[in-house]
Picture (cartoon, rainbow, N blue to C red):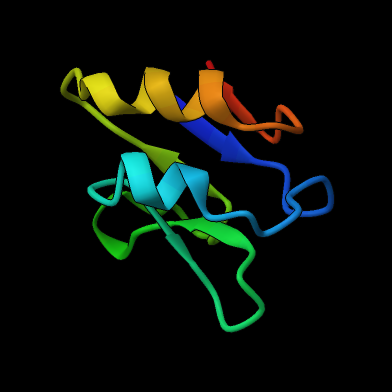
Amino acid sequence: MKIIVDQDACIGCGICSDVCSEVFETDDLDISQIVTEYRNEDVNVGEVDEEIDCIDIAVEDCPVAAIEIE
């Protein structure tokens, strides 16, 4: 599954990294990005092969809908 974080939309609340630190982390400005293990060339795009339940929770809990799953 492909995960995309819209860093322009992200407000830096940290909910995604709080509920799913396995996949999401924040940078020095508290903007969400994908952890190195799952990151593609861009810090805001990642690929996860296995089903990780907390990703869906992070998507649902993001107050500005800045996380997309494809």
